Image (cartoon, rainbow, N blue to C red; front, side, top):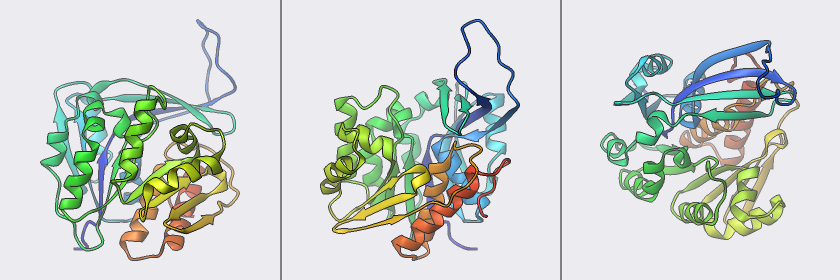
Amino acid sequence: MEPERILVLGNVNVDLVMGDVDGWPAVGTEVILPRSEMRAGGSAGNTALALSGLGIPHRLVAGIGSDMMGDWLASRFDAARSTWIVMDCATTLTVGIVHTGGNRAFFTTTGHLHQSRLDDLESHLPHAPAGGHATISGSFLMPQIEAGTSRLIAALKARGWTVAIDPGWPPAGWAPANRELFRAWLGEADIALINEDEAKGIAGTDDLDAAIADLRPLTGPRMLVVKCGGDGVRVFQGDDSLAVHAPQVEVIDTVGAGDTFNAAFLAALSRGEDTRRASEAGVRAASSAISTFPRRYAP
């Protein structure tokens, strides 16, 4: 059996995606939308689903609640490649509203994500196979994991993993404490996976190039990956940089696009592909995902 070279840790929850809406309805009114889909989500969940869709062996370690939603959520994933930590609480639910043009807004309940414990994750960490890459997703949505992310990075490295981190957008925004926390993670993880808005938020600027110039020195020899939506991706490592442009597609739903990129990108790196080929693989997978409904991960 091919080894599970990708380890996915972090937030998995139920997503109810509805759309499209043009602006917000007035309070007390109802809007009828043409489509909806209930699916497994969360950054780690989206990454694992993309890996499954791409046929990539992996291991997902994540929590769920002890309710009907938790049972349903677990059933969406490959049971043979999933390790579930069941918590005595409700499962987290996210309602995603897709706006005309593909942008989206989210409403998320606290649920099991606020009960996720670092000790539980650490107790399920396997040792890495050759080429093993681990990704920590959604730290900012799990308070106890957020506080222990540096410890989790160290634990993964001690087990031989190359560690990537995609912490997501903090619910409280990029307050100074959150900026400093992520800056510390930049110096600890091997790969930082962020989008252009996150880069600007962390650096405290509206200029992406200025944000990148601010963040690059913090990574040293490590890799900084900035996902730029329809403009593709920019990757920086030491003095080297590259850009891969995204193809033009008809956007249906951008939920999970960055997570899909992460899946294909890390899978390619784990196979020994160079950074450019890995970036191209990530962009292809994300472009396919956002332009198909139900989604596909390969053109």
